Length: 66
Image (cartoon, rainbow, N blue to C red):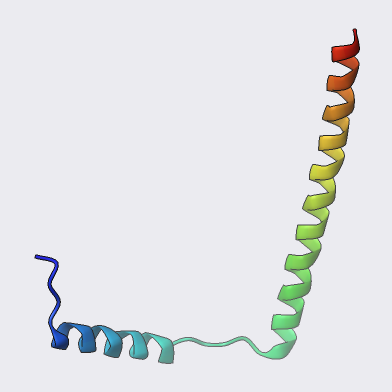
């Protein structure tokens, strides 16, 4: 159990090669749009998290000093 033969390994690699041939790569225009969308959403989310963190820190500081 757990042993692989050389033919199993080569058939696995042949399967991987066949799957990679099926990939449809996006054109540059759609790739650029998608990249901009991902970066924009990431930055927006980072800003939201930072603002929430600052508000919670401020609130906890107020509660601690009471």
